[in-house]
Length: 297
Ligand code: RRO
Image 1 (spheres, rainbow, N blue to C red):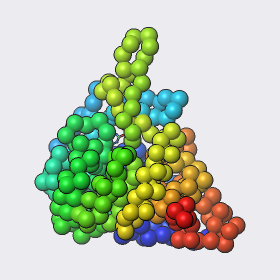
Image 2: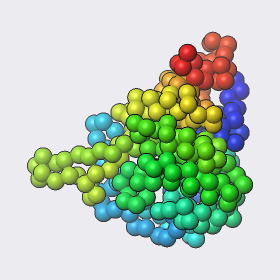
Image 3: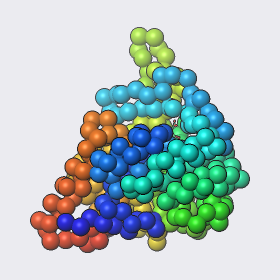
Image 4: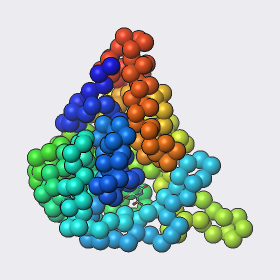
């Protein structure tokens, strides 16, 4: 069955995409994910200068999912541009970028544009890096301004990754007004774990972002509301590990899904989900387009 799909200005062979932040720091790992069936891959977020990230532990597995506070570790776009160049070839490569203001976003986008990524994903949603991510992504004016400046700087599609807000439609509309080709919902949800023996928070940064199955219902609600209100594509991310999860997101209105935490258990998750979606559609003699947003009616 043909699962080719047009998403936010890109044509993908199937609607599964590697989410930012997971296996996205090297060309080798991005290519490995592509070889395991992903329709596109997203890099770890890159900024203007090198960052070590937060003190460890930066990632823990909890009974409810993964909790991370990596703290935007990256080698800067000056270094990463070569890796990005080497990652190209198999499937579309989306460069995730961050900055503390519109000018920094523009600088990183222009720097990485030399490697000709297929699209940019603006990280306006990291939940635990003061002055970055969610700090900007909660302000509709800033979201519009940052989207606009990157959109004017590059000639490939620009996607905006949003935080799980109550007023997510407001920031989604701001991204759309700024010229975004798609919104991606959602990033991780602010969360923490405390060690009862010591009384200390477990993460080095104390608080971090929760991902995995626990956040799927939150992400679905966000996708559902964005699809109803926006004219651009919505890409769902948060707790997708099976074809059923993916179909749920498509029924809420998603054009594609991004997958992150589920890779921990099985890197074949992309191929398995595509197979499951194809069987589901074949059984019903329906296409992806038929299924998109059916839960809205
Ligand atoms: O690096 C991180 O700590 C991180 C980022 Br940039 C993000 O967007 N979301 C997340 O959960 N962690």
